[in-house]
Length: 411
Image 1 (cartoon, rainbow, N blue to C red):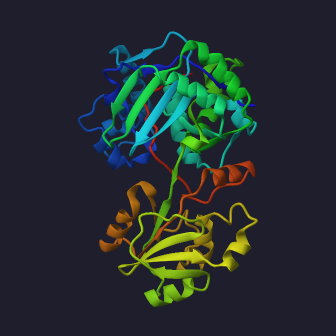
Image 2 (cartoon, rainbow, N blue to C red; image 1 turned 90 degrees about the horizontal axis):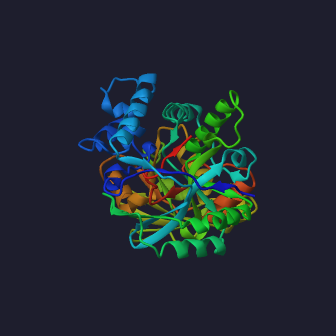
C-alpha cells in the first residue's frame, strides 16, 4: 500500500509566488533557459538551471554550477522570499487550462515504494540526465521539482479535496502561459485521513518526471550508505498526485524530415496496404484509436487501421498503442526510421502545439510529412506500467505542466 506523507514545506511568500514559479527545468534547452530567466531574478529557473548565470561555454555540470544553485537558494531564503512552514501538511494544487481544472495532492512519496514497485514506471531513464539532478538535489539538500504521479479513481480522496478547496487559497495567480494556479494548505484535521486513503491505494503511477524520481531515489541510496535514519527526508520525494479522472493526456505528434527517396504517391500506396486513407480538411484532433492524421504535400489524410492491423495487435499492450502502430506499420517499413530514439530524421511535437504547428513546420521546409496522433489514454498507461513494460518513446504529453519553486522539500 502506498505511503504518502505530509511535510514541512519550504514555499514562497504569497507576494512572490508569481515571480518564483517556473516551468520544469527540462522543458528548455540551454539557450531557451537563459532567455527565460532574462530580467527575472527571482524565477526559480535561476536555481534549477544555474548555468544561465554564466557564459555559454561554462560547464553546466560542474561543481561550481551546483554550488551556485545552492548559494542562490540560500540567498532567496535569507531575503525572506522563501519560508518554511512550522507544521507538517499536505497541499492541494489546482491548475486550470482553457477552462478545465485538475487538482492534485502535494505530499511526499516513498523511496521504498519506488524500489518495491508500488510506484509504477513506464519509461526508461538515461544515466546522464539522472546525474545532473542527483548532483542538484544532493548539493542543495532539497528537492525542487515535484514528480507528477497518478492513482486510479478514488472517491474518498476526491471528497477530501472538495472539502478543502472551498477555503481561501494561499496562492492564486495566472502564469505567462495563461494557466491559473491555485494552492490550498489542507486543514490539519485531514492529515491522517489523507494518509489513510493512500494506505488503501495499492499502486501509484509516474505520469511525468521519471528522471527526477530516479535521481531522488539514488540520492537516498547514496545517503543510506553513510547513515541509517528511516525518518530522514531523503527517504521520500516531492510529488503532486492526481486522480486519473483529473488528467488528460495530449498526443505526441511526429514530423518526418524526408520521404526516404519516395514520392507522395508511393507513400500513399504503401500506407494504403494497412490503412484506409481518406483525404479531408485538416482536423484539429484525432478522436478514435487506431487512426492518425497525415500532412503530406499540402494535403491532409485521415488514415484508419484496417482490421488486419487491429487483429494482429489486439492482444499486445505495447503493440496496440497508436504510437506503436504508426512506428511498426508506417515509420519503419516506409520511411526506414528503425529507432525513433536515435534517428535524426524524425522530430516530435507535443500536442499542446496542435496541428497548426505541424502545418507551419512543413510549409517552412522543416519536414516533409507530419503525423497527428490520437492521444494515449490513462488506462493504456496503467496497463503498460502494470505489466512492468515500457512505453515507446514520446508516447505521452501532459499539460498543463507543474511549476517548480512553489513547493520545496528539504532533505
